[in-house]
Length: 503
Image (cartoon, rainbow, N blue to C red; front, side, top):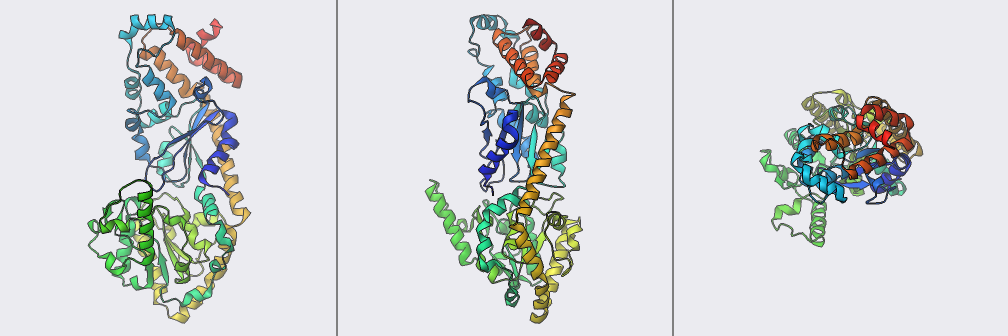
């Protein structure tokens, strides 16, 4: 079982530490974007030369979907405030006191008029993605991105500069979050749930960003007069936006705030105060979503309904990115339909789960048109809702065997082992790809930066002594790891061969 930090430390120790790789993680904590960046260099002493010589870098982008636009904007975001060693070194070159040796200071005083600003130089010779891979994720080998999405055009785009490694992160983390529910007998598949007047459960409290499709779905539910068959906690305000700006349907009228949502809002406000923030006193702020809500299970919701409609984070996309939301009905033994990208149900089958294609029509899973896919889900809800109590109970009984299989499989070692073996295979494939790329560019971004800094930023004939010593050290470290790569770098850069002859 893994928490986020345990998983990252395990990944670092298992795959990266003995290779001198650095690892970058971020914890969004309910926000949508790259927040709380943290660099893992557990094997090196902070401030040492070794800290600057990681062989390659790894971006752990497994918790959230890849936000390609945000990554492409890092060039602008991080130039004013560099968080990475390579960019920090570029900034230090701007200062007159960068050099510590007297001979370097003397040379600088004579040649500084030839100096071209490092940051200006590197931003001018790179596009947004190349800047990220070359200047922010520095190493002798091509950087790696660990992600948790399938069928992704964003991954295809970023693969020009990164080697992708897929991991079903939410499969692992959901087993950790939900592990104790295995012992709760209320979560066993229960035929009596078919007797509930409210047949469907929907969690769709957040509706901004990629989740905006949820407003459209709720509009369809109301339009088809299905809302009385739903248990749905609706929040009018999400991420500072009011739902009325995006729909003419008075959703709050059909789905009034419940005691549960008030408790969630109260917890949110208490946390705001404890963390030293001043909560907005507007009543709508009470309906702000708690960022941890989807990681909790409210077992009474499942006792009072029969089928969950899973509203995933992504719907209007071909990108499959399954989260803990998909596993909630599985953990509590509930049948489900899903609002997600096409191929979601096939992905679950790949991991050993069963779906309900023998009970109702799941053709929606292969529909590429997002509006049609939503309509097809609504049609299944209409058909199920139109059944008499006896007919519905007969249909529901057919689901129970699948629910039991899914619940047992979710908690099984087999499911976790499949994810970890897949992760292991993907990492080893990435290492092999790095070696293939190294045949064309053995020095990687590490030597490329050195080349550009010393000979295009300085416009000088040869090194400062401080650079000379550092580059000798860098070559020596490369030679320790691989004589073959060392010889290839000597052929790649004329100055490397000259340095080698000076030893």
